[in-house]
Amino acid sequence: MKKVICLGGGITSLIAAITLKRRHKDYLITVIEKDNECLKRIKISGNGRCNFTNKNISSIHYSNGEYINHILSFFNKEKDEFYKSIGLLYYYDDEGRGYPLSDSSRSVWTLIMDEAKRLGVNIVYDEIRHIEYHPNIILKGNNIYQTDYLILGLGGQSYLYKRDNYALLDELKIPLKEAKSSLCPIIVEEKIPAYLVGKRVKCVVNLLKNNQTVYQEQGEVLFKKDGLSGICIFNISAKINRLGKAKYIISLDLTRGLTFEDISLREKEYGKEKALTSLVNEEVKTYILSLKEDLYSILKHLSFTYKDNYPLKESQVTNGGIPLGEINLNDLSLKKYPKIYAGGELIDVDGDCGGFNIFFAFASGYFIGNKID
Ligand SMILES: Cc1cc2nc3c(=O)[nH]c(=O)nc-3n(C[C@H](O)[C@H](O)[C@H](O)COP(=O)(O)OP(=O)(O)OC[C@H]3O[C@@H](n4cnc5c(N)ncnc54)[C@H](O)[C@@H]3O)c2cc1C
Image 1: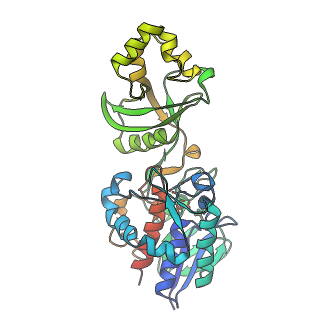
Image 2: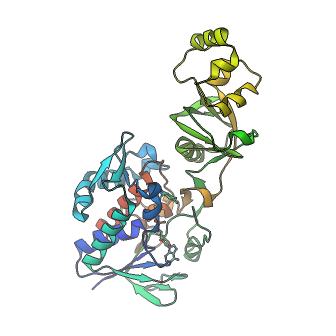
């Protein structure tokens, strides 16, 4: 009887364990989780609603997407069957984000945990501190475990206060790509006045790299004391990681479809202040009036200079981890250790906001679970 350990009780591990156990009922499959609960991220995702998938799954929504297209498509084709097999009913909202019909992450958590238990997947709570490979795979925590295959689903470094999940991989001498925060607020050079903090504005957000627009998204921006937040800003934090070091400007178009003529006419008729009333809120109006340029230019290009992403502990996902060059992409095993597999946020793939990250955790877990014989 073969033994398989799925290390880390997150989505990748649980989905790999379920998939593999369905294929090999006689395998002894154990999930080892360091905390006292599995799938913690499922519970907090999507503000407690669990945005676990997206209607528009495609490699363009991921860093290194071109290398994992086959993994995304494989699960995308079979996902409905898989969701149905665990009893998961879901819907897409107008933006294509997928949620359980209950709008409750608890339901997704329960369905995955129930299926793992039903199949007889063992769940052990222990923090693994050492991994040895030769001649067998040995894991050491409070107890010692031996396994034929190891699946690493240790997650990223976001949102954690204790970030030692990568230390295990140092022992295996796997060179890691530095973890950077992704899907997080952005710090800007400009001073944000206190009256603007906590206020929101609807706009089209443009990301300019060396003065060229490289990304655009419509949405809501939230002002913070040192920067900007909101879903489109989260996506911009991810794009900047993918586009590399450069001078970036985040430019907000607040015109809401009004043309240069519309705004000039309004300004002529009512004056600058009244022209802004009802177009933007009072705080944004005060901010715009404090700026020197002409009204249309400010409304069209309210610009902020990018300084940095917020730190990892305030991000939703990690850019970095095991470089794809270290991984056999045909089965997600490690090139140095063919009986060790890795997926989810631990590997150097991160997705946009909107269910793409949990989807990848499902997809890579499902892929690995189908590859081990
Ligand atoms: C606040 C927040 C909201 C989010 N919302 C969404 C969303 O709505 N949609 C979306 O797609 N994505 C969302 N994400 C991202 C998504 O949750 C992650 O990308 C996804 O959970 C990654 O799954 P994973 O299996 O790779 O890792 P994880 O789910 O992080 O699981 C890794 C597990 O490994 C365990 N572990 C680590 N080290 C050890 C060790 N040494 N021994 C044993 N166990 C260990 C950890 O405790 C953890 O349980 C959100 C993230 C955050 C932080």
